[in-house]
Image 1 (cartoon, rainbow, N blue to C red):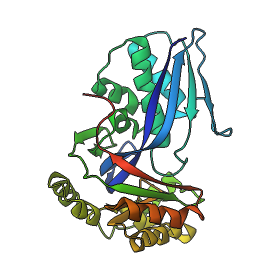
Image 2: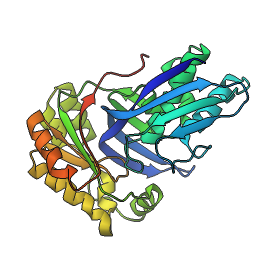
Image 3: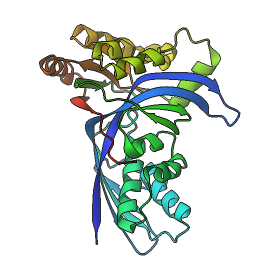
Length: 292
């Protein structure tokens, strides 16, 4: 049985803005995203009995259609108009669940790339993104990763220049945050500040890492309440540790800081790892994993 193994890179939001709520219940977003080296490994092989079996090193992770990796198999063959032969999926999870790092979406995108290779379908990245949108809003971005401006639900993607060489220290507190709750809070109060997305993109074009870091901003930080404010404490500690900028990614609860000095990044990582299980130091990966 042929098996394809794909790297499933985590993503970070350098900026995240919520523009408006749409009639379909989704929100129009404007976000600058990048991939990092840190991620999961996803192995896929085809079956012949129509069943999809999804296993993981996390015993509690659902292995049915609640898992986006399984939904990706269903969406792939439905779009091709072919009978679903089923698949074996093995997830080696490192990206923490509920972190805002698109772990599940990246797994689903990796499954789509693997199925594209296993079946010889020869679908383009654009075609796979169309399938990915049926699975989840972050999946279209995760098909190729790299640096991108995402708009709409996340399906309108524009490639962006590489982020200058840097390290990222990522730290997730023990709790996760309900994405639905955060969107409800955003809908119920006036946002005080919006990210300077235009300035951020200009800094990327100018290869100005400090300019990028200064403009990192996530509007969901304004909606944090109660114990979730620990996120802001982690952000402050990253800045105290020498990060050029720090921000929560996605709807949390992971926070990351960008460092221009790998030694400072390692020292910051050492400062956090004794207190937080989900903590790592990694680097930005600007090269897409799939050509257009």
